[in-house]
Image: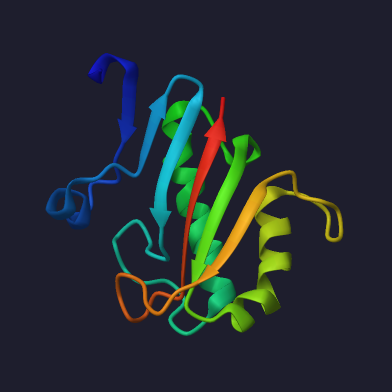
Length: 135
């Protein structure tokens, strides 16, 4: 089965410790693991700032898709986990339109789910997004 899959890694400690890939390609689909607001050095981006964290998460999704020749235009489904749905609702529309390159008010052709959770992997993380892209 390993010949049927390709994986992308960022090289972070959590990948080694927990044992996961940032994204896996199987056929024409790319499954992106939940992305969080960390920069390439592994540092938190946007402590206490939902919009900044969302922007960092979408940047990481794009980074995870790139090894497969894909970008956010290939995303067909996303699940967004937030610790504060009210704060997310205030900024998500603007940030999502920016990330997907769609004019404000226009529909984004991505099946989407928003879920409020009690906590994420670190107390400073406010948002995590996982998605599926098609090539």
